[in-house]
Length: 393
Image (cartoon, rainbow, N blue to C red):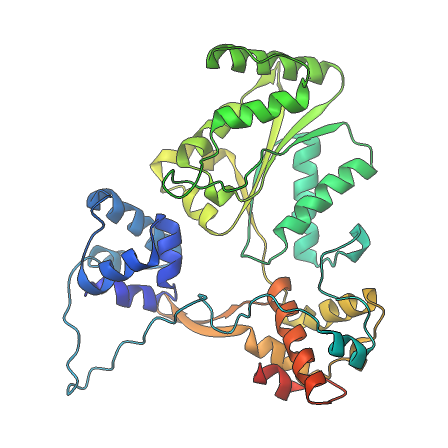
C-alpha cells in the first residue's frame, strides 16, 4: 500500500476526487493506492507530478508529499495500530442524497402545489447572499467591460443558475453584449472519455455568433484572421463579446492555454473578447499557478469560489424558498429541523494537521435533504418536519 492513501485521508480528500482530477477510473486509483499498480496506459512520472499538484492544492505539506509514493505494510490484525478507515463507496460525502422528488401525498399534506427547490422560473426566484451577489456582479462586470474570470463551485452550488441569470440580466438591460456559449455536451478533457472542446470549436462558435452569414475560410490561420476581422467589425458597430463556457473543468489544458490567445484579440487598447469560465473545483487545480503549462493563463485569470450557504443564513434561504412556493416556513419545518439540516450537511475532518468543519450546505444538497425529510414526515402523518425526520433520512 502507498503512503498516499493515508495522506489522502489526512487532508480529507476522497479517492474519487483524486480519480476525477487525474482523469482515470476510481478502480485504477484503488489499485494504485492499495497495491502500488500504476496504470499501464499512462506515464508514471507524469502521473506522479499531477498527483503532487492535487496534494498541494489539498493542503498537504512538502514532507508528506515527498514520501507519498513510498510503500507501507498493512497493519496485522493483532497489532495495536488502528485499522485504516475504509473509503465509502458511492458519493464522496455519504450524507448527500440523490435527487429527491416531492411526492403527491407530501404536496397534499403540506398544502404545496410547487416544489420550492425546483428549477427557477424567473430571476425573482433566485436567492442571493452577499457571497452570491459578489459573484453575480463580478460576472456581469466582466461580461460588460472585459476581463477573464473563472467561477469555481461544487456540484449544486448554483453555478448554472448564475449563468442563466447573467444571460437574462444582459437581455433585460438591453446591454450591447453578444454572449457566445460553445456547446459542451459530452465534453471531456480526455479523448478516451469523450470529445474534447478545442480552440477551433470555440472559434467556430464565436464566428457563428458574430457573423452567422459568413462562409468560414478553409485553413485554420485564415479562419482565425476572419474571426478577428469579424470581431473588429462587430465592435465598431457598438457590441462587446463575452465567451461563456460552463463545465470548464472538462476543458483540456491545451484549450485553456488557447483562451489566453482569444483574450489577446484586440483593436487598439480595447480587448475584443471577455471570458468567463465556470466549473467544479477541479478547474482550480488546472488553473494552479504551480502548473507550468497554464501559468500564463492563471496570471491573467481572476478566480472566484462560490461558497456554500452560511449556517447563519440557512433559515433565511429556506424561508425565501418556501415563500416563493406560497408557504410559510414555520408550517413545514421547525427550528430543530433547520438545525438538523445544518448538522447533517457538515462534516468534521482534519486538513494540514488542523481540525476543520467542511460545509455541504449547497442549495441542491439542502433541497434534497429537506424534500426527503418532508416525504418521510408526510408518510408517518406528522404535521411538521423535525430534527428526528431530518436525521432519519
